[in-house]
Length: 112
Length: 115
Image 1 (cartoon, each protein chain N blue to C red):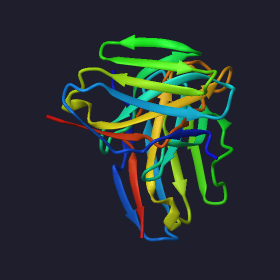
Image 2 (spheres, each protein chain N blue to C red; image 1 turned 45 degrees about the vertical axis):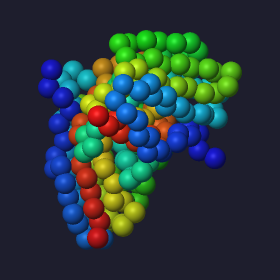
Image 3 (spheres, chains in turn yellow, green; image 1 turned 135 degrees about the vertical axis):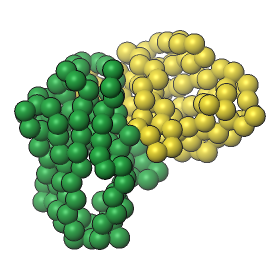
Image 4 (cartoon, rainbow over the protein chains, first blue to last red; image 1 turned 90 degrees about the horizontal axis):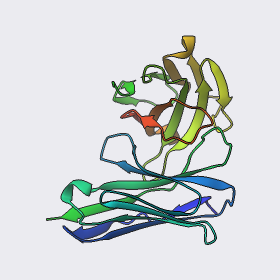
């Protein structure tokens, strides 16, 4: 079993839709949770960063962490064609040397 | 702020050949990482440097992969000899704080194809 599981998609939605992306994990030591966006032939870029459980909002993006269920989510409101990319969840334990464990990524396509 | 620079962008080699990748991190970033991203998978850490020293190389296949970071700035990752399963994107990243809780900045990667 992988430490981090993520549905690879692809996920195809119309412009303006609300998108929900999810990851589950097995290691209860994970404390820091991140979402990266990766455009084709580019490196991942950090979108959202969350510590422990709770919600964090940044513009059209909301990250949620439920440590009791070992489940994290990223919501994208009013999705745009420019949001079309692969979304990677990543996580790391408290006090670690910041080694990130990534999910496989979910490919999202937002069509006009 | 300039990003993380990597070269070359693409490389095609035959199996059993050697190859080297170069990375120049963001100025002032003490921590440098090399990740391997196989098609359809998330990045996997190969090696982490803090300044000149290696922090974590537990997943580096040391019989064929080597990496160095000279003077705590640029880094090179070498594969010798390459295998077909080494085909992947090799991502370099850097961060300002090691052991901290901040995300990295990734370069665009080197796409390696081994034929």
